[in-house]
Structure formats: C-alpha cells, structure tokens
Amino acid sequence: MKNIKFLFVALLVASLALWSCESDDDTDLSLALEAPKDVGLVFNITQDNSGLVTISPSGEDVTSFEVFYADGTDESIVLALGENAQRSYAEGTYPVRVVATNLGGKTTEFTRDLVVSFRAPENLLITVSESATSNYGVSVSASADFETSFEVAFGEDPALAAVPFMEGDVVNYDYTGVGTFTIRVTALSGGAAVTEVTEVVIIADPVTLPLNFESSTLNYNMIPFEAAVSIITNPDTSVGNLSSKVVSIEKTGALTYGGVVVPLSGPIDFSGPQSLRIKTWSPMPIGTKVTVKMESSNGAISTADYDAFTTKVGEWETLFFDTTGVDTTQPFSRFVVFFDLGGAPTNDVNYFDDIELADGPPILLPLDFEDTNRIYNIGTNNGAYSIISNPVPDLVNSSNTVMQFVRPATGPNNYSLVAIVVDQPVAFNATTSFTLKVYSPRVGLPVWLKIERIGNGGLFQEVTSVTTTVANGWEELTFNSFTGSTTADLRNIVIFFDPLGTTASPETIYIDDLIKTN
Image 1 (tube, rainbow, N blue to C red):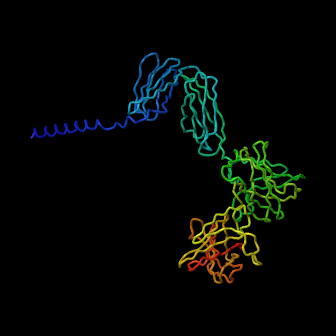
Image 2: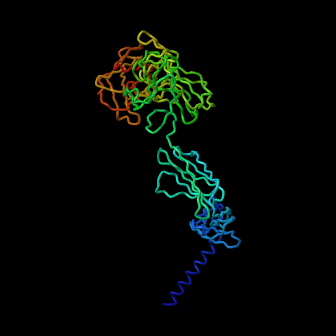
Image 3: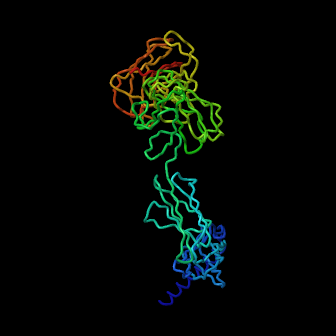
C-alpha cells in the first residue's frame, strides 16, 4: 500500500514537471508590462532634532522599490509597495535615489534631494491658485530656504490632518461648499523649528450663463449707474416667470441712460448659441425699448447696442436680442442692461431675469409662424410638415406664413399628427379654450388638439370633438371643454388630422394662429 502511494506522488510530480516544461513555451505576459511610472519620494523628518527621516517611495505599476540612502554609504533597502524606511541623517543635503521595479523586471529611477536642516526655514513663499477642474477647488505649492518639507491645512475641517508635500509638488483640494477659509502652510526643518504662512481664500459659486439670480451665497456685484438696482423677490410669479428672485431696476436722477452692469466670472462661451434672451417685466407702454450690450471686464471693449421692444404691459415676457455679427473672439464678460434708453426717467420700476444665450426667440403661444428667427422643435407622424408662404390667403387668414401638413394615403388606425414643443408650460383652468385656423380639402375632417408633458404623454389635456365645416378654405376652429386640471409642465402641443381615419389619397392641410383665448 505504501508503494502505491509513493508511485502516485511520483507520477504527480512528473506530471507537474511536464506541465511546467510545456508552459515555458507560452508567452510571458509580464514582458509586455510598461516600466513603472509616476515614481516619487516623500520625506517625513521627525521634529525632535534627531535627524530621523521616514522615506516613503510611491509609484504606479510597481512591485518593489530599492531605496539608496546616499548618506556616504552604499547601503540600500528593498521595500514592497506601501512600505517605508527610516534612517537617521546629520544636517546636510542627500540625493536619495529610488529604483522602482515591476513584475517584468523593468525599472524606473527617481532622485530627490533630502535636506536635513535644524534651523527654521526662511523666505517661505506660497502660491494658492484656483483649480482648473473644480469651481470649489484650490491648488497650493510652496518654496523656502532651509526647509525639508511642507504641510498644508486647508481650514475647512479642523479634524483633517495636514497634507505633507515637497517643494515642487502641487497639492489640490476641493471644498465642499462656499465660504471663507484660511489656508495654513508650514515649512518644516530637520528639527523642531518651523515657519508658517497663512492665506485667506473665498470660495463662491461662479457667475456664469444662464444667469438666474437665484443663489443665496453668490455676490453678483452688479454696478448700477443713474439707477436704483437690487435683487428682490419676484413680484409676479406667473407662468411667464416662476423664478423666486429677479432684478429690479429704476432709472433715477435726470439723465436718460440709467442702467446696470451685470458681471460674469469669466468670458462668455460662444461655442454654442450667440444671441441673447432675457425675461422682462415692465409697467411701461407696449413698445418700450430694452437695450443690452456686452463688454470686457473693464469696459474697454464693447459690442454695439442690441434692442428689443416689449409687447406686454405688467406681464413677464421673453425678449430676444439678435447679436448676429458679434465678434465672439473678444473677452466679453459682462452685460449692460437699459430700459427706455434715451428716454427721461419716469419713476417706473422694471424687472429682468434669466439672461441666457439662445439661437432664436422662445417658442410661445400664440403660434403664428411669422418670426423667421424662431427655431422650432417639431415632430410628425404619418405626414410631413413645412413652414411656407400662405398659398391661399383670404379674409379669415391673410397672414404671410403658415404651416403645411401633407397627410399621406393611410389605412385605418393610423395617427397623422404634428407636434410642436413650446418653451413655456401651458396653464389650464375650467374655462380654457383655444382657436386654430385650418385650411382643409374637405368638410368633416376631424382635428384633435392635445397638450402633453414631454417625456410622459400620459399627462395631458385633450379635446377630440372638433371637425372642419369648410372645404378648400380657411376657417377658425374652437377647442374647449378641457378638464382644467392643474397638471404642470405641459409643453408638447400635438395636432391630429383625422386620427384613426382612412384615406385613399394624400391630403394637404394648412394650419395657423394657434391662440389660447383664456
């Protein structure tokens, strides 16, 4: 029995040996590994004038480090990843060298001077700069004479240990929120003597577009001239502007150019839209001029004045400022806003809000397709649309531009429709109604009107009982008897043409002037 067991073990050893020999022919994947990278050294000198130094190597793709002490001996120590070494040094400068080795035997060397000095560091200079990647971040570096290393505390959390670093290193830190913080940098010597410098930093939200004036921590630093300006609670929270905060402006004095400068934290990014939209509220007559221009941070570079004119009295509306031709290579970083520029002060208080870049005016009710600047978000099903010159103007509809919808020949249970997204939610109550001008090729064409939530068509208001009574002529259809629920954010307007009906040949239908009448 013992002999049998021995034979089994011998066969197993032979089998393993054979597998090992065969595996020698396989490709050694470790040979493809890149040499270690980001190799570095951090020194921590005990603050008791003993000269005891803890040497901590670091790097990526490393299996071991060999640290050469460079203290007049040839001695070194091999460390695994995460280990450190300790050595006592006399005062002086030592070019400590580390050789990092990876699994494939490739090496990378790095040398850093260890300065052991028992006098207090001198000429400590620190640099604190804004982070390039975070609105709440800072980067810290330092230099000094007779220092061995540094520590930095960022002043946000007293329980957080100071971060050690070496001259030439940059330490990055992200604050968790806005506030005023004291950064303390300590230069360490080889003994107990240290030198400290502090710098106060203020972390604030950046003022960027779109600008809505809602932040409770942000200092908008607006600069009024010949005007009284403040950020106040929105006096008219309506469908036109649901914001909590808006800017109030009143021209004062006897001059005609009262306005306000609205600075940003940096130059405007024109990589996308280049024109402007601003929400305004004015008690002044319809046609009151609102003027905007853009300037560099010191006002030395300026655009032309861009004008828009109010269309409402005592209501919020969104005005569009066409800045076609503006030189987008200039560092424009602030706006100047005027109401009734050139007119004498009238003691009227105006408001504005939500400054943003945009390609065109907002898409709002009523929909009349007359403004060529508007860029519509339109979808269709079982049909094709186009915005064209009115091909059949008459007394009912003499407007210049209408929407054409070509409905193809369809079988039963097909939905032919056009959907238009508007920028402002449509509000409903028990008496809400709409009118729509329609040109139909036949009497009895069913037209449905549905307003639904984008992304959730199950939330909607709809009327399905309206049909045309005129063939080959314009007529105005009325849609009422909505449920009047308070369903919010209904912005997708869908118009159906004979849904579920069958036609043997295509039909061309025109629509215009969708108006919410109450």
